[in-house]
Length: 118
Image 1: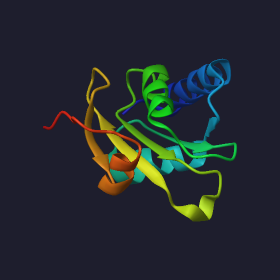
Image 2: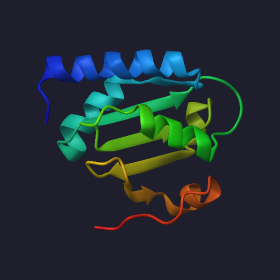
Image 3: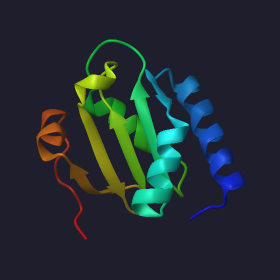
Image 4: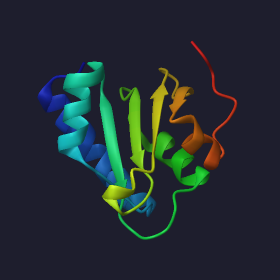
């Protein structure tokens, strides 16, 4: 797991790439840190939708592409309403291939299939 300074650099890099991409998401740094420290002990990023509308598969694919290589977990809150609980959680390998996606019904809804398994 990267040290605090390195994690902050990764969050800053990801935030900049998100702004440049025009994707309607922003990083929730406090939740990203919580997931990194408590749940996985791996570099995690949590992003939340910033505009109305529903998350789409192409957005998820673009989010994965702009992730720094050291990130192995990505949680995407798909709707702007935080109480909606519509999210997709991805476990990625070192080449950013999706190894696991859950909850499965949300993954299927946005068209994430053909997952590389362990």
